[in-house]
Length: 364
Image 1 (cartoon, helix red, strand yellow):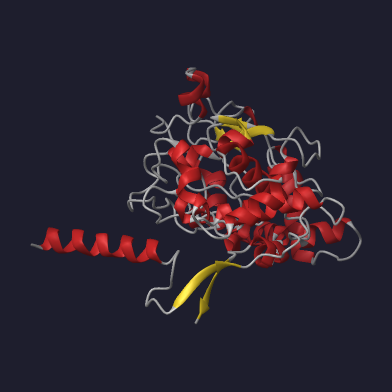
Image 2 (cartoon, one colour):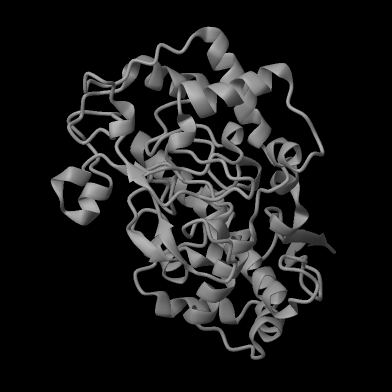
């Protein structure tokens, strides 16, 4: 009886959640899309075509009909105020099952291509394990994932969206035709994702001469760049480039998750994962591919005394004796490093309306 009640509650929750796309929960309001008629300014006022594509991409990013039972959207696991990461170790998919890995932040993807700033380039290295290199192709990955969004055949998606009143106008403005195709969906969403930029942090303002670090932040920067060489992996360019490197940092041995090694099928890559972009790092907890560390203090504790002696451990994390480093970061040093990491927060990006949920409820 208890199991039946739990199942019934789950089914009712899914129905109510999915129905909010047509009306609010009590049926007194209608959901509509609130976006600028001429598209938001993502790529500059002279890039109207790109702005219209990104505007459509924003709507699709928050569209729950891209999941099998209309219960989750891409934004369900990538939330704006968390730099488009999730706030839990593992996210929940369309059937409330947990994902395998932590949801990575989505930001500055346009700058993850070998240090070349090119917002129109759609190739890079994505996911914790580098299993996708093309951003347009990436769009279908979570949609077809059996845990995340659950649609086996993406060819059904255009029909799911065709009858919704707002897409005809959005697709026409973006592509010159109301026809909905998966190629257009992928192009629009990729254009939106490339537009998500964190570039107005205090770190940027200091570089531009518009602000100054406090004594504590400056100490943290020096520790980050010199004594502990965090910058050796997490290179903090003023424009926020994302790394394309994948390394083993000694989280486990033996490895329960092989990371890149699972994709490459080579033992020397076992336990290697993508080096994350540290923009907004103070807002993207929990940390690591499995969300094991709840705080930045816990991350620093790992580097201080927790690095495992994995044979694939990156050479930068080995001492002169070839053993895993024991950095023994003091409490005061941790405080200073975290103060510096907090200067990498872009509060504008975290609240900018053009990245926010466009679905609103209109009451009759």
